[in-house]
Image 1 (cartoon, rainbow, N blue to C red):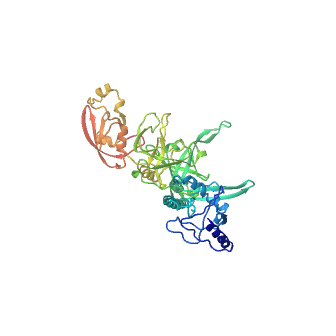
Image 2 (cartoon, rainbow, N blue to C red; image 1 turned 135 degrees about the vertical axis):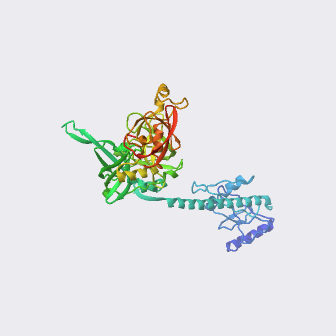
Image 3 (cartoon, rainbow, N blue to C red; image 1 turned 90 degrees about the horizontal axis):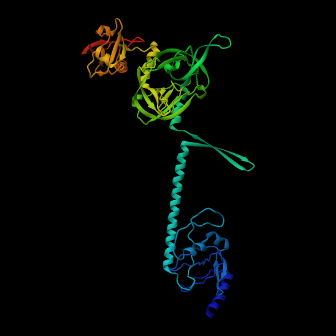
Length: 519
């Protein structure tokens, strides 16, 4: 110890003159008791021996060992920032990974690899096992830092891609209490893009009917009902609108109201009661969009369906509802003449997009903004939700082309009136019609029109038609479906099978143009 005291005086002189401290002998180490909240750091200008743990040099202040020798130690602020004393006090027995916080804030950060002293506190070489623990901890923390950086990079790219689709506009205002940031997101989706193509082509159709003024007793024209329509063509200063027959039925005057609030008087071009379609003509002055028809035969169950129209009147004009195509090739029985008896089966698209009164005549649109159907009806009972129907676009197009050109649809006809066999009492089926016991279906001829196709083919009253063109006829509804199908035209020859006086017979009918009341 006397020799060490002499060396101490020499080293004090060297430190005072600014000379660099020498490396301590491998077998010795000097340690100053650490004040609470501080860490001791021993620095050296010379490289350590291979068995020692590397030490990072730092700017330091001067300290004194218990033996009276000066040594380099970290400042209180540097020690507090690193928080290494707390870390090593907990990890001395067993290494663990944890987050540490500094005095300056509450944000969780990964603790840096702390600096270590060159020797242990008992004057012997530090155990190699402790060094391995700290080295492994350093490797682990370095790897963790790399993972965090990688995650931040991926997040940055994801945010950048998101910003491409959703542009954000920020408006910043300053108030007395601070800064308020208002954010507006310009959200563009496939649905909004589809609507941009077609929404302005969907209009409200107003039906005015004759009335009498209560005050004066004079005749008036009052708005009796309203529906929707779709502008599908623009030519020669005129525009053409498709809607439902029941929307315009009984009207004395028709008006069309556009999405911008402008109105145009409309002329009824023609109607088709069987498919519930009508065509209107207006001036193209206020027309800004023309709808495009899609291919309804290529629809798939489950694909997006968007309904556009004016439910409950013009107050809700331009209402958009979205759903899916719920079913295809549905047949729905309807009453075309209002007598309470279903006399037609409409072939329709089923959708769960909300369709309400006033939506009739509006558009059912696919995700490309194409009209795939004209909304026509829904099932409306307490225990049913989301079952609406639209006339397929491939049915609509040929019909409105004929209405636009001729004002009516030319259909083939037999020239008869019919009654369903299943509405006739069983006794009469056997005594008057003399049908076999296994025949309880078909369409009975009630009346034959003079000079009609049926009369020329030899059909008579009480004949029961059971087959046409190779297809079974169960009632008058299925007979019309066969007769009015798209592949049957005026002038075509059709084979008809029927029962007369209990015997099955066959004849060939040459179809003529239909009248309004006969099949």
